[in-house]
Image (cartoon, rainbow, N blue to C red; front, side, top):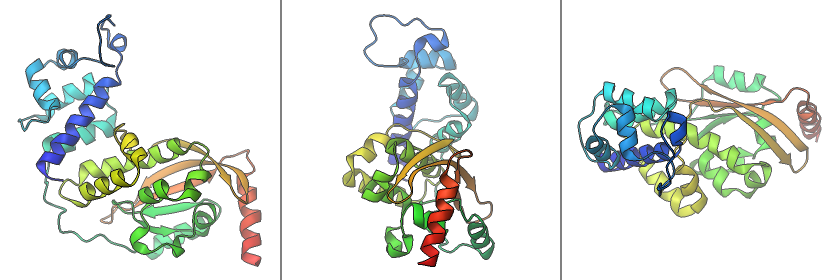
Length: 282
């Protein structure tokens, strides 16, 4: 992402986080003349111990010098969690912005990861790269979601699929909750790999493709491992309940593994076993 795009992303992030904080939660009076939700800029500056002018410039996306210590104060004032803090630092400090420009992403997973996917027989699992291209999946994922083998490689992007495929839209009972988990992880990568222009192009494409994407993306949620309980209404298996576990694959690949574990006490695992065994026999 170029400097202008980076600063615009920083501006939108700060505004959204400021709007989410109610004055009374930080010991400030609510007042009766607030025209916008959340804190005012001067209140954030006061809580962070910086001048209102300096914070205003930062939130406006001006190219000004910042330090880690000042960002720490702003992060505390905005009550950011650890993942949000890291995202703030990535955008504001622009560390190594050109490192990833020419790097070619790995598109194949190792035999050990293939083995792990196979062993997770009744836990639908996907492996994606930092662009959220799907590079690996197991039969359970193909059964519950889509037969990814039938989708052209260039179209196997998880973000694109959840916003464009009707099967996935109707599958999740709470579709917005479903996609927000993916978007929060995607934003982590977006902030981390500033030199990769692919993100700018992809976000523009998705915004033009689906207006709902823009709305959800502007919520600026950031989380490396969102806790998500998902209820699916599968066309053949009916109601299915899963807990989503998100795991980063350590190494040089930047792969991410999403594992859907059947909720204990539900009939989800039994349904998967019965349906998948029946499919294998056919």
